[in-house]
Image (cartoon, rainbow, N blue to C red):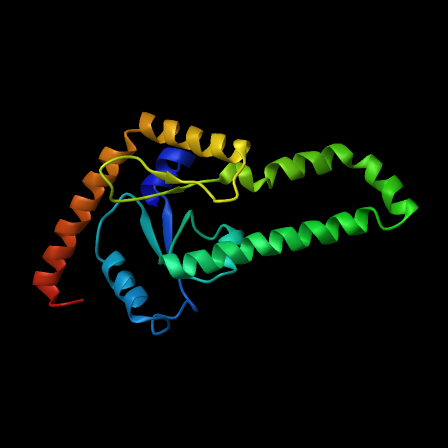
Length: 187
């Protein structure tokens, strides 16, 4: 995730948080607390921030939020659903009566810019890590714009030698975790 933020967003040393049910060290499932124990002691291309909660996803508290696939899928579907719901409310409010429709005319260009910025098709595609190649999984409901966006992301990552960097970073982390395990017992 930190390598992705570095390659895709140009962040020099991305901050990384672990998605959890609270910021306290005693909260969350064992595998999340175990990952936190490791991230506190290893050197990687990012900087470990600590635990983050669901509301930190949209706040920008950290550059990268890490979680397992189960929690990530729930978070993603929740954000998608809230986006559709909010867009529906917004559209309803802007067209609710003649005065609202008239006022909308004055902000039409700003609304179009906002719509483009929030278009989920432009953020389509999840990068698979740990493969011996570049693989981006596109959303099942994606259209041509979304697929093109995912393809452009793949091209960009290939230009940054992303696959090699991920392999090197995984090897670096594994050697550090092995050394930690020997020095500290099982984390």
